[in-house]
Image (cartoon, rainbow, N blue to C red; front, side, top):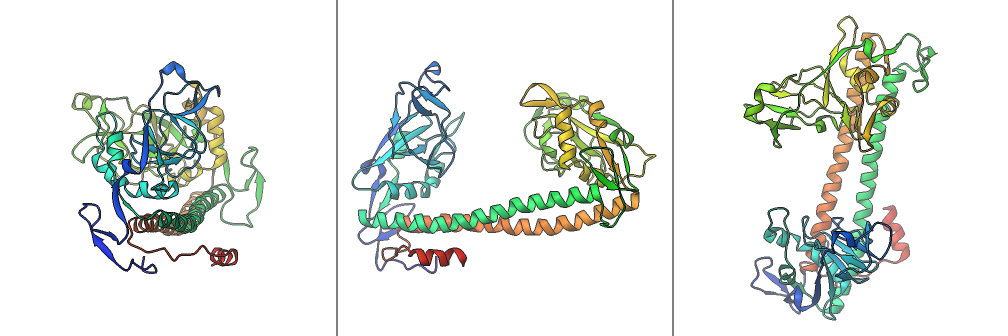
Length: 452
């Protein structure tokens, strides 16, 4: 905030959330400057998905999305938010905010807010998220946390004169747009790094590290040409068997080192084994657990959503107190084959391999698929000589370490930019910085900002 000036003079106020405000500002409860319309849900059979009636929103947790997603419609909603109203979530996550770009029916999870002549809608858009921490402090509920219409109305605001509100809103529109652009660029970089990471793995485990190696037709369409001296075989020649545990009753908290845990399928979602993704087995079922996790084995999800069925990860550390459930497999490798399990774990992430799983998986529900052991072990794979597998593994480790540093830097940048965005908004709407003399840059100045 160092590049912005403070107001020339402030006056003290008696508020827990703020010690002073600029001279000329006031404090007021939200209900004195805005109307608050609490939503009311219709009967379950009053809504439809056929587009008949007014778009209906039960609740919307997408902060800052100025055009809420339409999912249901209600012919005669009990409560309506008019176009231009702010849509404020009164249920967890309390304080999420949207802008009604049209009329919406609103349910109990939302209230609509419209300012009077004393406060501009554009200023309210920036003010309300700045006070989210106050709502978090008072939200209560057993099923889900929520705040009441009265609590929303009692929110105490720092209020500048109306023209100054517009200036602050214009300033924040411009400055946060710049920050959002920087965040988007970092997020694009993170996405590109992920794609590059997978491309490096896929090329290394299917084409090798020697660009001059003689190639041959693998005879497998999705593998194409592969190094001439590599073996093309099915997984069943590398994996002697797939073992699994049993379904047991467990509390949905990770087991301590002195407790017994059963893995959740999420332990392999990221292609990196996460032992902490487990549940604590209840004492009554401790005698039933079987198939402890083994270092060096690959854990595979045999049942999951279409995107995650067959997800796998290598166990790289000893885990003495965690067991498999029935939905996960663990590999027992053929000891007669020279295999580096880390090489195979990388191979299992290749897009073509994942496609073969999708083709083989089936299930009664489109949202939950299952793959049979026989089908899984029939998928083709490649086997370089052991020394080459180890070279490939070392190469991938080095490249992934490099990408990991770049990814970490980009994520740190996103976090810092988000913190700066939040701090800038808070400083502007509470009067810590004076933007009255701020002027929107000309088109030429904006072009210079974008290329800077």
